[in-house]
Length: 525
Image (cartoon, rainbow, N blue to C red):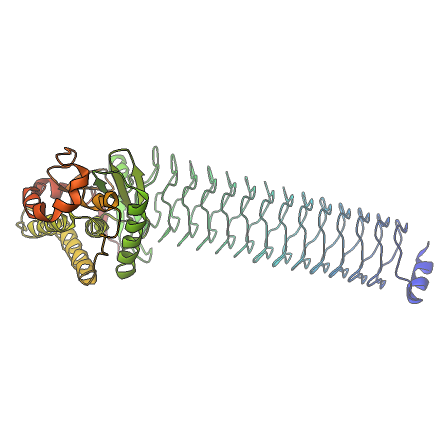
């Protein structure tokens, strides 16, 4: 069939041209909207400026075809072959290109918004300044592709392979790049705000100057990546691998990176306001100074020696551990979960549920907190379900009062302010929970009720891995009583037991709450 015959049949209403052979034909400007050209041979064809909107080109061959300015909106090109085709400024909006081959095709400034390119082969494709908003590129091969300045807002790139691709200045805001392969990709000055990069492989990627505000990079692999000057404000970097990554002057304000591996990384000049300094791996890290100012304006700069840097960045998560000298059973487990739920509803200071470890003789309930200053308040809340709560609370309050009464010449201003803040937080929690009434545990089976009467021990661990025993009932671990008698004898002996509990020494407590060794601060207002 030649071009004249094709045009005549189309004008007569014929739309089915499946398997047609029009190789090397000149069809520029032709209107074949809605035509069926499935499995057609259109290699080296000239369809520049043609209208094939809504056409069926499934499994068609369009190698080295000239398709600049073509209208292929809503067309079906599933499994079509368009290798080295010229699609400059082509309209492929909402088109289907599932498993299509576009190796080294030119799609400069092409329109592909809403297009479905799932599992397509786009190796070496040129998509400079192309528009792919909301496009589905999941599972695509975009290795060595050039997407410089392209618009991929909210695009789906989950599981895509983009190794060595150029995404400089690309708009990937709110894009889904989960588990994507992005090794050695150029994402410099790219917009990745709100992007989902969970588990993505970004080893040796260039993210310098990129904006990753609110991006999710949890479990991402960023070893050797360049994040110089990148904006990671409020980003999620939980358990991310940043081994030998360069974060020089990166903005990490309010980022969450607990569990991140920063072994051998460079953080000199990073902006770290409101960033946790625990739960990190920092062996061999290079960090000469950091900016802790709220706005990242260098008004609070801290300089380090290598030793001080090690102490500033540490690997211990602050915890409150309640040890109960009895095993936890099912009924007691349900009851304690309900009690903690009620406590949190009144005072939502506890952010994470506790971990519970049960042995044949003992139970450990551990609360992890995000700040050393929350340890005392969390300890007050955590022990509420137990008979030892009153005695433990007395110890806690007495300890804080003792610390506050210390001579100001003994405490540095920093330590004094810290103790004052702990006291304020503790008083707020007490006021909030003043009306809290412990549920009646008499309805529980005797063994379950006994669990709450068992001797307890409360131990705090700060971010510097120092421990402080707040309370320990003298009979803890000695099993001087039969468990079956605990519940009925608790009220009679609670006063005498509590009086026997001793406070930790003031020196020990001050050492525990002291600020981590402070680096030299230089204010540059």
